[in-house]
View 1 (cartoon, protein in one colour):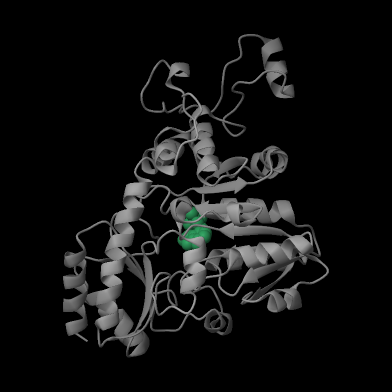
View 2: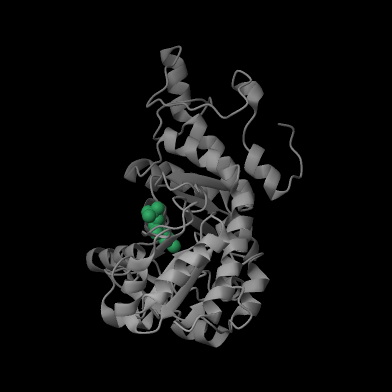
Length: 395
Ligand code: PLP
């Protein structure tokens, strides 16, 4: 494809692929191979030292995976991207890359349960400590930065409380201290939010979610603003820890990406209708949605996101008992963790995604026993609302 200054919708369909180099195949071919045959011994030697481009071994690079990486790098306005076998493989790759024993990582007040688990492993094994903090004002951020802080790890909107963190503010303070900022952008997708444009150094995704969008792949993506540093990660942590994606999963993600813009718009439209319904319901105590006008962080959300997306959290009156009963009464909406799929999914963070987080930390993260997280799918919004209505009627 001739290079142009294309918009996101076009990048999602075309970026990183030139059919002329792949037997004119319209769609990206699946190179389902573990290794690549060299024509001569000398050619193999040249490829290993980087004198000649071309395949070597799929853990070191694969043409299908490369298309996915180029498309994601463009979508996040990054210098380059790396694809991994899970979101957690992307999280662990960047945290291992950025830290050494004795360092400190500063995190937003809430983080995904397994990221929390990883941080605790790093603390136990390598004395890499961490703190969770609200990071809401410049003074607050300055107060929690330590001399050994090397990384600020941000989730926004935070899983599952939907709290919004001001990316621009954090990167501004971090730069003064020479600290790198990593943003987990899973909840927004690159269609709704681009942290690198707000000054972050790295952005990552559980590509399992909106990148794929069809609930049939576990994968991760890391995008960086500095090509040289990304090349270092490709040649070290990614290559030697080996948490790479399979070519088939990369191919499925490329297929998913083609419809991301259409999906995100529909997820958002459905979510907006459901927010209005839940806000009017007597059974709902609190509701958290980035673009809800009553959200105290609405202005920050509008500054850094182009739409509210498909995730809503809310508390049901009556705590855990009623939250679980409500879930059990649903007929159409599926009880499942994960998010960003065509199917609407509901989960109970206290007993599911964040069950590994001790109660004290969980409550500090704002995850109360009655909290539910809804990932709004692509169904008809009225059908979803009817399902919730009949479930509420049983409480
Ligand atoms: N980050 C967030 C915000 C998540 O919700 C998840 C998974 O739910 C992950 C990271 C980890 O991704 P994966 O399950 O693909 O390893």
